[in-house]
Structures are given as C-alpha cells and as structure tokens.
Amino acid sequence: HCLSVRAVCQREIDCDRGHGYSWKITLLRNYWKSKVKQEWLSGKYSNIPSENSLPEKSMYPMDVDTWGEILEAELER
Image (cartoon, rainbow, N blue to C red; front, side, top):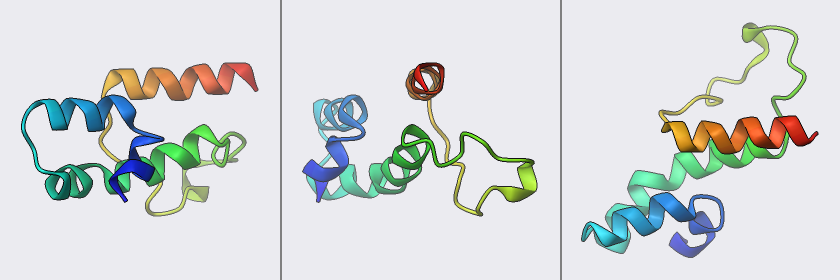
C-alpha cells in the first residue's frame, strides 16, 4: 500500500522514511493526503462553481511544494 501512495506522494514518503518512520506510520501519515492530492492532480476539482460544490474530503493539510504541483497541473490543463 505504501508503494501505491508513494506513486502520488513520493517526496512525502521518502522524507518520512528518511526520518526513520516505519512503513506503517508512513502509510498512516500519507494515505489520505495521497487520495486528495490524486483527485486534485487528476482535475476533479478544476471547474467547481463554488466552495459548496467541493466534497467533504477535498482538502487535506499539504505543504507548499504539494500545492505547487497541483497548481502546475492546473496550468497545464
């Protein structure tokens, strides 16, 4: 499971593993982030009419580099 999460959150997984977190803790720390990030990167939220249209789990605390990846993907669409 952690390797599938790593496909979306490579930097985050590598950082956690580098800091000595176990695979289990790394997965717990990054699972929902990878789901939300994948939906943003796939364009699921590209053309929403308002904030009320966002699903409940559309946001997750992400760092500036992650939001940079998402914004770059939006610019390429």
